[in-house]
Image 1 (cartoon, one colour):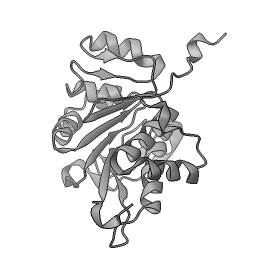
Image 2 (cartoon, one colour):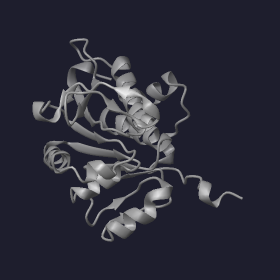
Image 3 (spheres, helix red, strand yellow):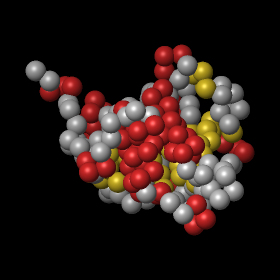
Length: 218
C-alpha cells in the first residue's frame, strides 16, 4: 500500500435514541480499526469516524448504552461517507430536520451506507427509489410494503449499488463494512482489519453470502 497516494477518508455516522448498539459499534470498529492499521504519509489514520446527532447531547442506544456524539447536525462536520445505522427508527423517520439533513448530506457524500433498519431512514429520503436494497430479515416485508418501488433483496447480507450500500441486520453490517474498506482501500487492508478483530470474513462471498434465516429454522 502506497501511503503517499491514498487520501484519508472520514465516515460520518448519524446516531439517535434507540440506535442498535452493534449497528453503530460494528461499523465503527471496522473503520476505526482499519484507520489504526493504515496510516497516511503524515502518520494520520487513513480512515476515521465521527458521530453526529440531532443535538449536542448524549443519545441512549437500545439496551441503555449512552453515546456522546462528536457533533450536532447544525455543526455540519465534513465527511466523505455517510453511515446510517438502524435500530428503532420510527421517531427519526418523522423528524423532518434529521431526514432533510440525511438527504442533503447523501448528495454530497461519495458513498452512503445503511445498516439494518437504517434502510428505512434512507428510504424516507427517497434515495432508494427504484434501487436494490436490503435490511434485517424481520423488516424486509415492511420495507417492501411501504416503498414498493424498492427492489428488496432477501438473499444476501449486503447490497452494493455503487454510491449506496445497504446491509442486513446487526452482524451483517460488519461484513458490509469490511467490504467497503476493501472497495475503498484494498482487500488486503480489509483482511488485516478482520484478522485484527478476530472476525471471520471472506471477500469471495461478495456481494454477500446467502444468510441464514432464523424465521425459517426448523
